[in-house]
Image (cartoon, rainbow, N blue to C red):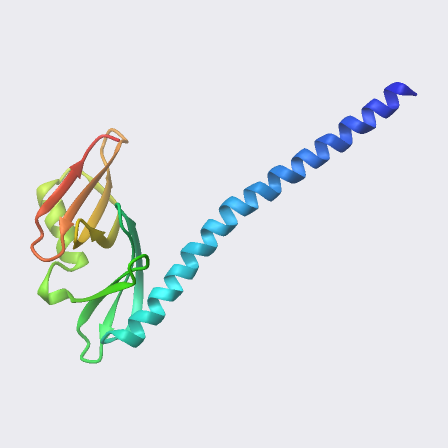
Amino acid sequence: MYVRRSYYKWIIGAVITIGIVILGYYLVFGLAAHNISAGKEQVRQIALTKSNLKTVDTYYHLNRGVNSYAVAGNNQKGQRGYFIYLPNSKKAYYLLAKKGYSQSKILQHFSKLHPAQKINKVNLGWYKGEAVWEVTYIKSNGKYGYAIYSFNKGKELSYIDNL
């Protein structure tokens, strides 16, 4: 009789523990995903109302000391443009691709400087007071690296290898 009660208590404790773990998992990852998608929608709305962009087709998120969301799209003239929004300071920047390095230009530039690297991801954002491109890559040895380039001049500002 005592063993049966002990067994049921153990089962109930295990079920409660599993429930708490599932709830914790949902809270951590569900809320994180919600914040990212809410940030995307927020920057899209701001970009369409406060800049010359008329369409948005690409989203970026970069956090290198300053949290930034960015979108890419076209204006009424069909010109490629980028909009960077810094939610903490509520500042925003509209950049024309032709006045700096576009995503395709920065990828060509990176491939020329680092030909053996396989590009994994590209992000546009804000770093040390200026618009930047961050290129994430994978080396042939399987290790990751990051390169940060100035949007305006294409200058390599940071290069971190073998992570």
